[in-house]
Image 1 (cartoon, rainbow, N blue to C red):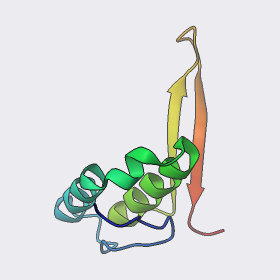
Image 2 (cartoon, rainbow, N blue to C red):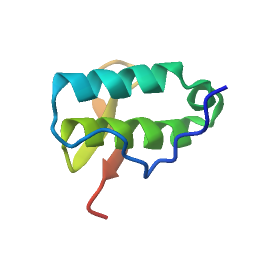
Image 3 (cartoon, one colour):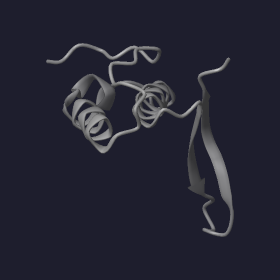
Length: 81
C-alpha cells in the first residue's frame, strides 16, 4: 500500500507542465490512503498536489448545491498561508 501523502508535500516541479500534472494525477489515483482518509483531509492533499503541479498559489474545489443552482467553494487551499 502506498504511503500517505502529507498535504504540504510537493513532489512535482512548479513548472505547470502537462507532464508534472499527469504525474501528480497518477500518484493521487494510485495512492489508496487518500481514498480511505476523511474527505476534508483528502481534499487538502489533492488541492496541494494539484497546486504544486500547476504552479498555482491558490486552488479550490467548487460544488453545486443540492438544487444544482449555485456554486459553493467546498475547499480552498492557499499555499501562501
